Image (tube, rainbow, N blue to C red; front, side, top):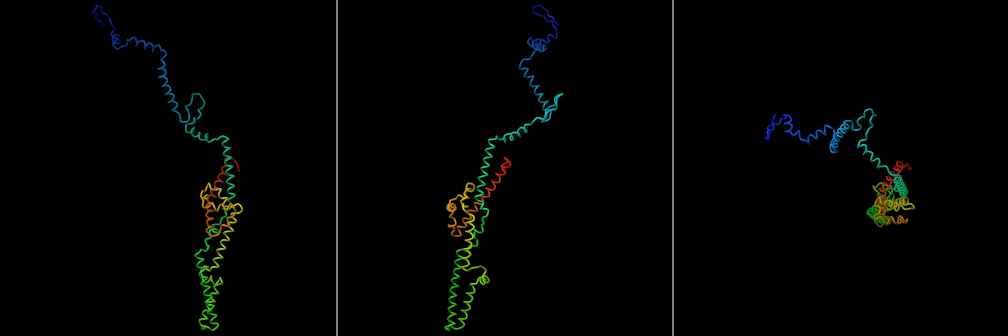
Length: 314
């Protein structure tokens, strides 16, 4: 193909070269880049990093194609070993943290031994709580003041009737009144005298209402309760010893029990037991102490079991 030049020069140009020139293929910069690629010159640093990323992603994909716990097998190598997962690593952490140093173990052992000794002393001092008899100290059959007052009135009536009937019988025997009145008075006197015999009173009445019997019953109940308290208190004073459990059961340290605890400490508690209210108040204190005593025994067994299990101390 010929191109006409204004300087009257005709130039022969190849058609393919002309098309390359139009597309920009004959640009010197582009030709230099193509020559660099053909010569396989080393790439710049940024190009190297861009080329390494696809290779790493391919390696991860090939490693992930295996199982979760085993890596991909190597060619011509030994069989792969299991790889610990994240769950197994987390599971081992509590076991490592649970391991304590010998000093802390020795301190814990000393603390438990001292605690066991203290609990054993409390149990030994308050072991009398195991034999407390609430029925003896409650005295449910203790005669009430109203019952005693009624019995006293019946006794006074019996005395009046006995004196009246004996007087009429004596007057009839002397002939001062007719025989019928004297006979009735004598019969009433015999009946009243028969009431002095307990089997007759038990046959005629359901319960014992005589004043002497009630007084005797009251004294018997008081004697049993006093003997029981004397056995419980001993020489050390049970109420005073129970104050060792005051921190566990704050009710034992209330102000209403202070005087009774002080008398127990001084060994003068029996002298203060003058009525049934005092006996029942003492029983109330012992019942509160028994609640705390049961907790002390439970804790003692736990401490002993822990010493035997963790430290082999018996």
